Structures are given as C-alpha cells and as structure tokens.
Length: 402
Image (tube, rainbow, N blue to C red; front, side, top):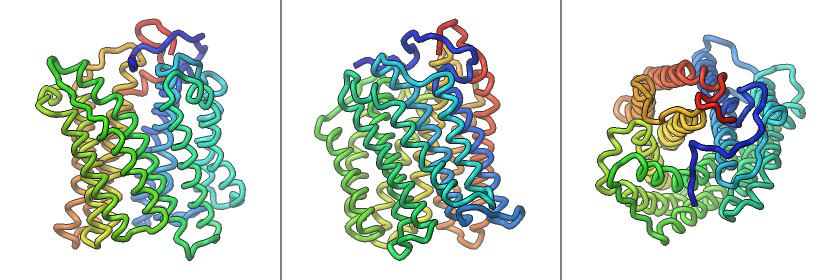
C-alpha cells in the first residue's frame, strides 16, 4: 500500500491554516513544549524556580516528556497520516482545535498548585481516549486492518497514564504503579514507532537513495512486535528483573536484524539528513533495548537506559518524523532542508550521548552532564520551532488543502 505521505487527499480547507491538519497544531505544541518542559525541569531540579503542583519533580518530568511532548507528536502524526493511509476524513478545524486545547489544559493543570486533583486527573486522562475516539472510524474501517493496532496502543497509553495517576493519588503505591505506568507508556510509544518506522523508513529510503535495496523478512516483522509486546508485558508484571532482561535482549536482537535489512549497503542515506536521522533514532532504540536487557541483570543503571530510549530513540525519531512530515505536508521539497535542521539532529544526538554515557565515565560531574544534555536538547528544539513555525501558520505553498 502506498504511503504518499507528502500528498494528502483533498478535503475542504479550513479558514485558519493552523487547524487545517493535525500535524500543524500538535507538532508546534510538541516543539514549544520540548523547550518549556526541559527548561522548567532544569530550573525546578536545581531549585532555581520553586516547583509545585500535582506530581513531585521527578514524576512531573517523566510524565510530561511522555504524556505531554511525546503524546503531542503521536497525535500530530496520526491525525495527519491516517488520512493518507485510509482516504477517510480526520479531525480538522474546530474539532482539531478542541483536541489541542484538551492537551494544553492537561499540561497547565499538572503545574497549577490549587487545581483539584480530580480535575487534573480527569482532564489529563481524557486526551488519549478522545484522540482515539476521533480516529476510530478511519482506523477501524480503513483498508488496512493493521491500523487497528493503533487503537490498542492508544488504549495501552491510557492505561499507563491511569496507573501513574493512581499512584499520584496514593492508591497502590506499594505496587509501584508509577514505575509500571511509566515503562508501559515507553513501551506503547515504542510499539507505535516500530509500526510507523516499518512503513516510512524503507519507503523513504527507496525514494531518496538511488538503487537502494530493502530486505524485509516476514518472521522479523512479526517477531519485532511479538518480542517487544512480550517484553512490555513481562516488565509490567515483573518490573526490572532477569525475566524482563531476557525479553528485552531478545527484542533488541530482532530489531538489529530488522534495521540491518533496511540499511544493508544503502550508504546513500548519509547524504540525506532527513533520512539518516531516522536511522540514527532507530539505532538508539536498538541500543536502548539491549541496555534495558542488561539492566535487568543489574549491569546498567535504569535511569540511563530510560534516557537512551527516550532522549536518543524517541527524541531523534520524533524530531526527524516531524521535520519530514511538515515539509511534505506543506508542499515543500523534503530534501531542501538547509543546514539548520541537520544541526538540530546532531545536537540532539550529542545530548543523548552526554546523558547516557558520560555519567558512566564520570559520575562526579553528573549535574554538569544533565545540564549539558538538557541544554543541547533545548537548542535542537529551538531550531525546530524557529525553522518550522512559519510553515505551521501559513497555507501550503502548492495551494493544496491541508
């Protein structure tokens, strides 16, 4: 099935370009929130700004990077790509604006000290189910039954958020619900990225690299999701143990075979920044899964493993996908990306290296490494926001709707 991610089917245009298609408000929100959330976290964590609100500082940072930033990217991508995959209508205009406001309200409420806990939880928990409801028809009735899995993943994300909120309410804290919810969300996001990457990375490689050869193996595709799904279930039931370690080592090994089949000898990807960033992000996911396996045997610290997957894998893949989708869906040449965004990709990759590996070498400067990694993250997303905001706010350059 053709992906055609740069040419959406015609749909009645909206009067305000920002709400013409889902990538516009949600990728803009993701970029701005990546800046603000990281800046606030560094200020809160070091006591420069007094923290307060629904979560404690560590919980807030983890929750907002996953259920704030990452959820916005997932929403923007699905609200855009589902129309291409199915040819069916997706939310635009007022409904899209309502979804964005629900997301924004959740971000504001969790840092509002006087907000009632029931209101914070209700609003924050509502976003993912409302997103799923807005997309259920094209995902369920579209031509590709595999798309129905996105509804399952969104349900899993909602469950993960529910576990976090139960823990925040003091319910089941002896069960470690916050930790279970956090890692379940990470795994649901990884499953979404594996499914999306399996469609877009080989497709983009064949389109962008002359003579590219992509090798797909049916057993690898099936095993990619089966092994990660199994690992996610084991982690949920028996977190941070040898059983989870074995499961994640197996999942990482399968992803290595999958990535090698896509890459092979296609060295031409390194001449396309919009492509190599996706491979680099996927490589970080592979590394993160293997390190997570080692962590199950006490051989690598879990906080560093988490940042390998989130900052390195999820960060690079989402920044690369937002860049690629925005260019394609605003009618621009995806290869005419200039040098600013490749610089942002490099800065984010450096941030992951600093955050994951330098503490292992020199723990005495742990605070320094966190500040450096956070600063590099912010610089990367500052470039993204400055580069792409005009595209989000203006109509497509080719006159098409979307």
